[in-house]
Image 1 (cartoon, rainbow, N blue to C red):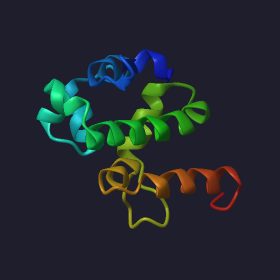
Image 2 (spheres, one colour):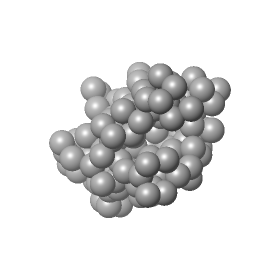
Image 3 (cartoon, rainbow, N blue to C red):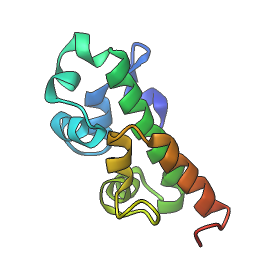
Image 4 (spheres, rainbow, N blue to C red):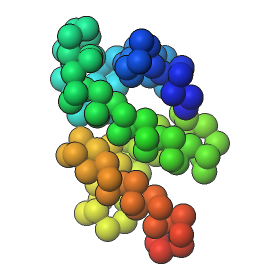
Length: 116
């Protein structure tokens, strides 16, 4: 997912992310572990917490998109595929819990053949 297509005025724009992933702002909020207001109110969209969660979600999607061939399939994986070694949690659940770094490390380990 091209960062320029999901950013607006130097910040991640939930509306653009939703358009790119063919979903709604509300779904983007839930997927990133944010409240509805975080993606609707301009003051909340620019907050550190909102921007960090959106960035983490985009980082994970961009990391796995090449292996799936599209952002939509990467998004489906992100939301629904349980990750080995994380008690059946998905990448989405881990990002919601502030563990995006663990997801990125997991993907790197899979790429290196550790969990092949």
